[in-house]
Image (cartoon, rainbow, N blue to C red; front, top):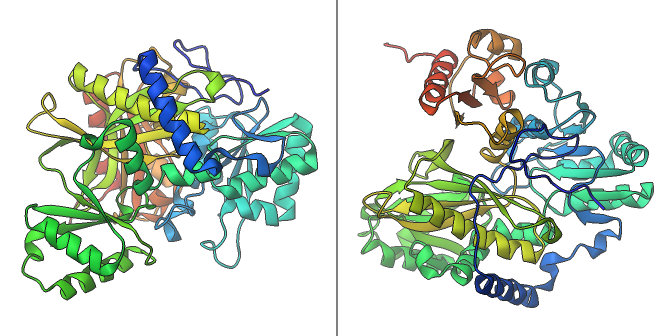
Length: 506
């Protein structure tokens, strides 16, 4: 049996192979509510039995985490619309979960300076790094599939599993490729292989905005959603957008399986109200194709709620059913910018206690249904607070992220470094599309001299999450930690000012 995930309410230091989970917002629900949620999950399984199925991968493969090393795969390429040059930029980020002798699998060249930073400055441990490159086109083949097709890489994973007695595959996003890799390793090594994530079909469903919308209606009620409709073809899409635009200032068309704002097409109603229907149709289709849409329906059409007080993200850990109830680890306020609401960072929120409790209860109910469906691992629920103020706002849920991400990985690292007793503050910064000088990682460390966090000596500073965007001069991804939130925000501003050149006066 796998070693259970431990919930740390103190800070004993995580054992090798464990992911530190801290329950910061306890939630309890009545037995009658548990029965109702179980009935919802059972109905979903009756409609789609394959949601929970993992039998095809063999008796020695199962969801969970085993006592042996982890093989970490930070591949974003299987998230629709997030391929291309963005993929390798975040692969190192999942190394924040690693301990001594865990394996990090990359699709691009290694960065020895960043690996030394993880080990010496953050105390991550000695990683075994494997590069499964693709000399043809990195966008074609997911990283887990490459591990299967490259004998030197597969043999290293196989040998690690065999000598350790078990192996846990920890992907950024759990897909069939990760499960196929686990199956092949288990079949040839004869040992148990665990996948830190949900069954592949369930993973697809929870990350699909259409399926999640239906789940919110079943679990929480229609009132927990913005005004939402579906379009099943180009003419229907144009007609629906035109009808909604008559009484709403702003709409958004969503590609259901995209991540966050990558598949969001924001529409100012005033710009299309007087256009012919065919012109609206052609314009919408053209703009969606420019986002990377491949012509699949249905699409989601949603009213853009206004005014918005905040955009909370509830971070949840969902254990196996025998491992206890879901754990609400934190609620973060997302910083979003631009017309499509692009994620650029997050910070733990300070809200009225009643609102925090409502958010946590909603997320806990959804997670409870997911758990009964067979979900295991990291999950977050993103919403908005609509209204004149946080105290009087309505909670609307807009998407689920059934994967690791830009909030959950820094949060888990903070759990690891500081434990449950941490009373300070931290700020997550993630910005792309910047114009900065290209620098080596060693040069970046020099630029941030005096600001960097060091696990051996300090209690505040900047923690770099990844390296490639920084080195290319295209983006930032770091966490600022300090004894208080205001100090963390000040550190984040100082770091950004050092890394981003001041605009020219010319």
